[in-house]
Length: 391
Image (cartoon, rainbow, N blue to C red; front, side, top):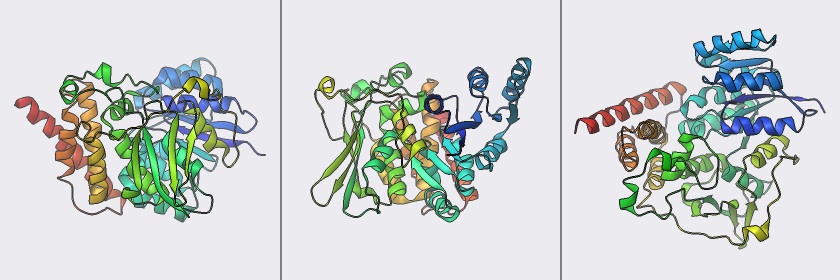
């Protein structure tokens, strides 16, 4: 079996690090073609020394210059590239077989779309790509013969539980949610949430942005939209179930009364290994689940009043693509402002709702319109924050 060339978009983040951990366990099957990051020179330098990719891409030019100097100083032959266009180039290169799309937020859309249009196996950890471009992205996958495999633990679990011959007999998808760190907090308590509290997820080790999204349940809302596109189901057949232990990663309910669930320890190396090896299963380094230690599995309905972001996502999907773009853009700006202590935790859904309701009706079917709506929504979000400060 020929070694597969892997490009990792977002190599310095938690998904990128976990991907490299899995790849290191299978040096005969995979080699790293390109590593990319925004500006984390130290992490990419360390990874380049260990995995010796052909290319390293830094979005920020200053970071690329620093990385190049450090690599040259140790005699490395890794070629350093800079800028967003270089991301597209390595993602679509003929020497890339599989692309791990793990850039957080809207910044990941263009290189992930480039990989799909180049017919790659796209291992999608960037849910925003489908939230923003939905039909356009799915059409690109089909038109260019790409493979789209989900990396989010929930969608990967659904993928494992679905029949191989389409969606026959599927009643609905049950996406599990941990409930985040504030699952039991009252509405009044949520008013005083700090950034430090919001990023302390009880089960998963994740970046700051996705941790805050988990705390507001926006992450689950974005996953509902992503699931609709990935699995071709309407939103009313995608249900969220709060499951605090994060042992069951998601379930599929069938018309014969069966519910199939995928269980495992909360470790992203499991879905990563599944996507890398599919349709085979590869050793991931994740310990087997100890059912006796797990002891119990609890389930609750999500509280949409205390956590309105989930309902906003359902609403946005019903309104159309312009609304989901606005939802995502407003949320990204709101989370950044919350982490910077410019707005409170409870302001996040208020900002998102206001900006989302200003979006155009319908769904854009070209990239320019998608990017215009994204930019307009970010400008409106910043204006919302500015007005709040004035009052």
